[in-house]
Length: 240
Image (tube, rainbow, N blue to C red; front, side, top):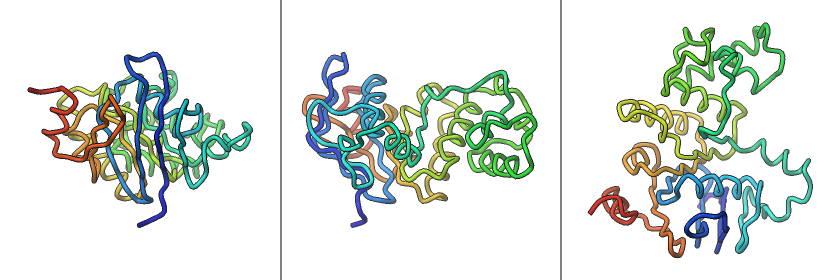
């Protein structure tokens, strides 16, 4: 088995929800793409913070890239470790007063007016990879629909060639009709870049389109259940 990129063992974190976030045992090998169902918006945010080392669990251990997050003991080391993550989240701010190209270029440089030719080429490749039309690059970000904005966030999340992509309810803000297209975008990006990916989502159909393995997280004890999409929905109480 490939070396684990992420390991969570007996993790518990209180965050003001109905229950603490609990993860009994989660191991993500290098090159795996998994989806987790059963974490609401608050728990998903806490999960991202725990995985990136922005916060520490109240109980248990988290090991990322072979290192315990509790051993990252200064801000410089944490910032260096953070460079290895790609975070796909609606919480990622897009600057509507800038063009799409400028929003993407900011990942690499603050010199965005004008964007130099080399950066422009990188931006174009990112946009195309995430499903964005090249014609949209010089348009205002504010003019994009929800699918377009999701694609910009996907492009930014993968811009620095992350070792681990963590997606936080990536389809939650999309209209139903746009979800299959974005699922295909995300699945393709993960496959083409050979990313290790963890996708937190309440949409089990989206999860099955994007990830190789789908797990439900039992809220009472944090154990993982790998099963069919229909069974996961029943486990989470979303259908009779």
